[in-house]
Length: 64
Image 1 (spheres, rainbow, N blue to C red):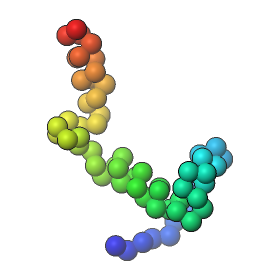
Image 2: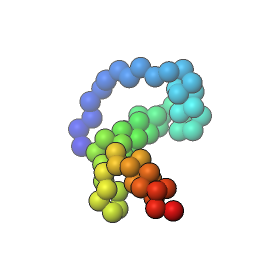
Image 3: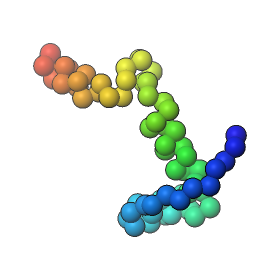
């Protein structure tokens, strides 16, 4: 897959956390993975859109 260079402005606390968790050299892969999971994979295993989760949770609370 083709890669494209871009500039990403991160908050200082986010940058430090990512640097601790992933290291400087793997930060790009971590950002790509996070963005892919949030933007591209919108459906769960049951086919429910991630945006519907608050509604589903609210529905479960009402039926208890």
